[in-house]
Length: 386
Ligand SMILES: Nc1ncnc2c1ncn2[C@@H]1O[C@H](COP(=O)(O)OP(=O)(O)OP(=O)(O)O)[C@@H](O)[C@H]1O
Ligand SMILES: [Mg+2]
Image 1 (cartoon, helix red, strand yellow):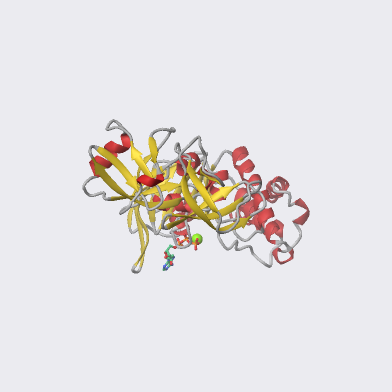
Image 2: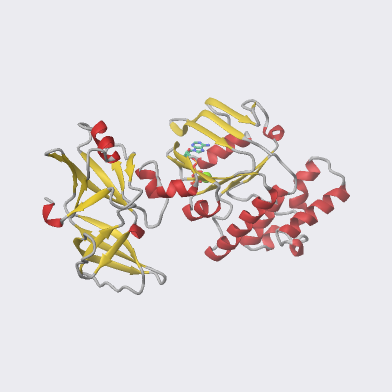
């Protein structure tokens, strides 16, 4: 039962800034994911919340109480560490019972509690074994059981599934989600796996090089990424970015790439407004389109405007094929169904889903605009492009 609030939190290690002015509000009962590549500052964030590190600047509040000076033991938060750290010479039972013994719980109650948690995590049959005689997945469950056995104010988990094989990870993902829904406790879950974050989180905080890039629902992080970094971290393969020149001619606004062009239709168009406000500083924008929002045609389609391109490489993955396509001077990735076959060097036509085109500032990477409906941007015929 906890609400965790980070206010302007900065943490340095020598000359490294692990976290820079982080502001976050984690709600009670929320499955909150912290997503970022290695070295982003994710573990540091958890260590600050649990009290193993102190912020250099800023404040941390748990349920409204400032805890900067509060000892980890008194914060009452359970953390599952990245490297698991079970006691190798203790049995599974004793490992799970450890936090309760530390709190001097009577042995009978300990037995009941440990058995109950072990049942929830399907590890009852392992209670007498030592960690050395367990598989990776089983060890993982023991570590989770040890965190769950008492009822802390919040749970923090640091990449708990990172060392598991793909199938087990999938299984544990579903179990963890179910567990959190049953417990309805605050869970802060660190991962560098965007699929984990997207599939489990109520909200995701995307961190890169110690800076919070976006904190939002999985849906918004995916569909309305705050900037280029978020659009690259979330989604696989990541969003394609195409540098386009901003051209203003005769009261018209065009985005021109070496392989295609868009016309911003009408001065009442929101993108027009956004770009005009940014001009004259914005001479160039990045048009971002996800690989799944692009369609390839072997012949020029008649019902929509498409741009000529050429297949560079195909990567069949079974359920889908990723096709690298040369469009103008750029290579873009396109996800195609396996039923559509394209071969290398084949001439094709590329069409964007015009309801899902993002326009980013080329300098800062910040998202300027995202189309929400077809017709907001109009394609220009390839011949118009220069
Ligand atoms: N005790 C420390 N001393 C010096 N530098 C540290 C220390 N702990 C972390 N750092 C640095 O701070 C930055 C953030 O580290 P952190 O461990 O929080 O990243 P992370 O996102 O958890 O990465 P990973 O995904 O690899 O676990 C890194 O550049 C790291 O080298
Ligand atoms: Mg880490």
